[in-house]
Image 1 (cartoon, one colour):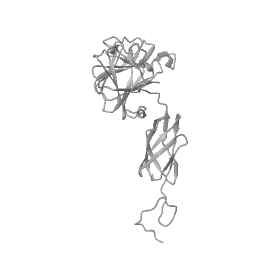
Image 2 (tube, one colour):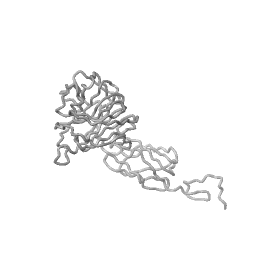
Image 3 (cartoon, one colour):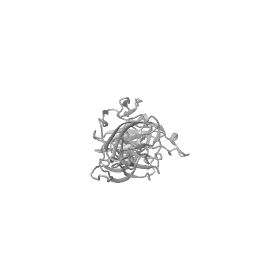
Image 4 (cartoon, one colour):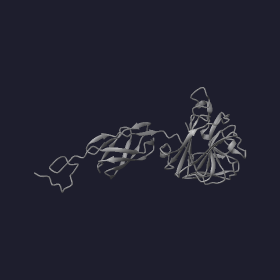
Length: 313
């Protein structure tokens, strides 16, 4: 009997004159590729030969709310309670193991918007301290500071204080630590980076009080300051909702620096390093003298810059 080619084949039927089997599902991309443990996250699955009754499973996490958007795109929610690499079984009638995996990681970020954090003036033993005369405003998008005076403002994220030598990976006490800071959009002149117990919070020239500080003039990265030294750059940064500033390999000459564009201010995006905007090596011999270090911010004169998160690894 001839097959009626005017009828659309039923790919999911088990047999018969006008049926055909759908090819194996094909996965071209999974996004995001990192999720935070104990946080419900939406995953976007892209590829080919997806069906409305597609099944997606993994033994290491709970999957729910699978949504068929097209033959080429499916979304689902995932919740994982452990640090692991997640492999997914994709089944459209034929089953495959996705070649693309997702990492479940521990956040260990300090979200500066967290209502549990304490704020206070310098010396108050608060999680986040600021110079006397300043204040702060917490918003969903980030925090900003008030009472600013050009280059004399100071904020220290004391909750992330660490001993320089304790992070060393060799006999060199400067080696080892990685410091990362997430900000909102770049609107005004400011600095951020690392301070220490030697920082004079009452100085009117805070750019020489930090151990090492990124210098931003709006969306232009102009280099580094700290301890009577500077290292110039001129890099115009494209517009992103958020940015990550990173120092790797310690706070010293030879450390690596990176700037990334971040597509969201949500925690799931903070580990995304796909949008590299600039990188290099600290080549100047800044006078790194402090033993007790912490992330540090110096807003110059505007309250428009938002600070979102920080961490020390």
